[in-house]
Image (cartoon, rainbow, N blue to C red):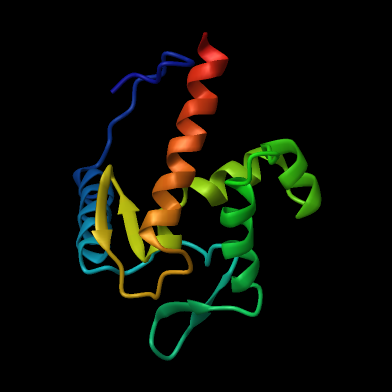
Length: 139
């Protein structure tokens, strides 16, 4: 194989390729079993004994963020400032499937083993509003 940056030719050992492939397969398997694989999202803690996400003391703030975002006078900047988040951090929270009890990995969404913090209806209304904002910016 040739390095795209420097042009140096090197050989990749089969085991290194296999390791990445088997690691991804393992992660796909875990996500399909509803297991969350990264750090706990805001509003959750890790229950190390059960190896699953559990609501944290700040879990109510997540529901408040989703509900406040749907208010007619609310916008991303105001809400981010109120909750001491960046606008991008707020968007990540509002788009995170973990909050409806799901696990997303490799473009697939699976039912999670952890409890949801917001209802699917609330989550979907927020997604609609975010999509409308995105469309307005493009036009």
